[in-house]
Image (cartoon, rainbow, N blue to C red; front, side, top):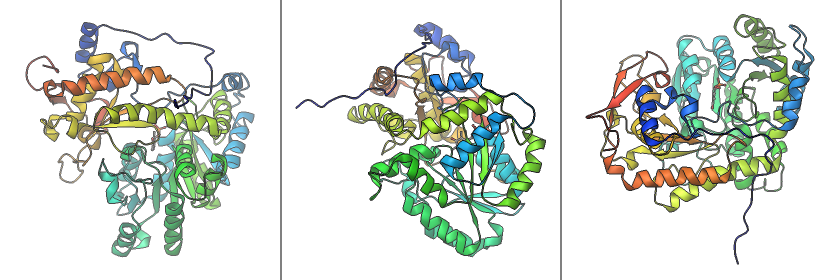
Length: 465
Ligand SMILES: *Cc1c(COP(=O)(O)O)cnc(C)c1O
């Protein structure tokens, strides 16, 4: 019998026409951007899979909520709505608004990380690690080894290796570990989830040693869906309830509202400890704004409160995860090397396997992202040696095991037909992969270099010979 198809659990009320440049125009745009997809103008992009950060489509209810925004400088009623939404859905006692996720990371790192400290985490995230290091801390990766292998099929590839964490505690002592940063899901591992059991185990171990567990909750709803889908005992539990249990195994979280809260800007820091809250309130006014807006407009907070409730709708999150998988399955079927299993928010092309003729210093991932834009106007992002930056002591490139190109799917923005167009382009590049050449870096910024670095093809003008 024919398999029954499914479709988006929403219909379209407003449309935004897309740019469709021809190949010469794309080539010109790419050269102007220094072969860095971050430096392309969005008006030159057809399907924008650079990031799912702040690129969410809001619902009609969110757009109407904007009109309800209370723009009072202090005590805005929109803040109290947002605070209530976070308390109800996430379960923390105290919440502070920030302009986006890194605002919360800054506050947390400033309060808790001291020079000589170690901050264990399940793989690094760029801005998270940058804040830890700016405060004198050293990030320590305690994710399971399998997470660094793009081909190992595991249900919960974002899990913490408890032995690694125990070893670190033994080596440096619990007083040198201000908190464990647990990302749910793990962006840099390909959007891989953490199991409920692992969250429980990490929390138990940390409690034994008096170490706080702070979640990077940015993609927590996606993580909750994977638990519903894969972990024994959760198949019939609503995502909303799973989420609550997840957060019960932590002391607080940083949140980028630009991802799972279904808005375009905003974030928060949440916690259960009153003392930490009091100190955070003092810092938030220095860096973000009053504790009742923290860098957001009243209307932003209204939209985010509404987005938080919509994000835990089981139909929404199911389609979200399945749309990503729909693209991934087409690529797998065509033999394209991608990170397995497909994660929550993106497809990660394995650039080492895709372009085996290129060395890591020839920036294979960057070259592949550029080639994809050239082929079809699809914008993706490098996640490899460029993103990993340099070692702060030796000045050498950090050399991540994974060299990837990330195709990130914005929430509720594109249809499954757009996914077909993307699949066709990647497959066509794979067929002529030996013609794609490497890049050299012509300009390297000192921090977070991937945003502004400029490149050019290693030899000759044509990226694809
Ligand atoms: C996006 C992101 C952040 C940072 O949030 P911003 O809102 O971009 O500052 C932190 N952690 C993870 C996992 C993210 O995906």
